[in-house]
Length: 287
Image (cartoon, rainbow, N blue to C red; front, side):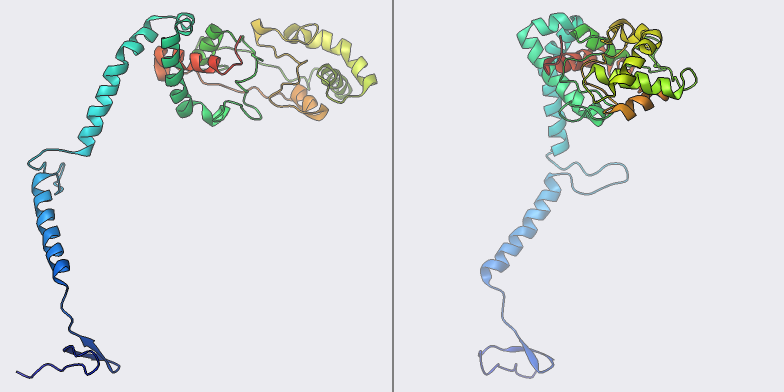
């Protein structure tokens, strides 16, 4: 057996390997590192015996302790459900007016409704419930069907123009392109714009007053302040889903948008709908 070559600079034996004139030193691992490595191997073996580790066809080895973080989560969820069971039962049994009148129950319903809102409603109304073009702001005090808490519950439960629910809120603005002449549409658009302070031509606005009375007042009221019993929007408050100038108003009269809100009662149930109503009402825009 040949003797190991000793590196002349470090005094350490080499492994005998050489690459491009570079030789590898045969430095042993530090003892503390070696024993740490052995300890981790022992720990890993013990862990595989004590805890779930090896996947099987449909499950996994359970381990001697039978402990899983998934099991911990299920236990925590079960405890949380048990803790709130009395509150959920109270929400289910009471009306939204009674829930809101009870401070403790109102706080619970508001928190639960906020969670449900983040899952089901932010896609249209935004995370702050401020809405966007075509989607209502739930923080203001403008409500097509009424902003009392019972009205809000009704709207959430059955939706608006939601064909799958026979009790849905329903109002549909007809298109007037085949009813009015282009000049008449322009005139009434200028009149509607003037109601909320949008820049409009005064002469055409005056010409549109009578056209409005004959064609629009039935839903929007003689003064343009809307009619909640039929879902007619208030045209005097500058709060609009689809319009910001006379051109938009003309387009809405000619070929109106009629959005759809789904009814949530069938999907979420009465209790969650009540919680959502309490939360939306608590945003400050209710009546």
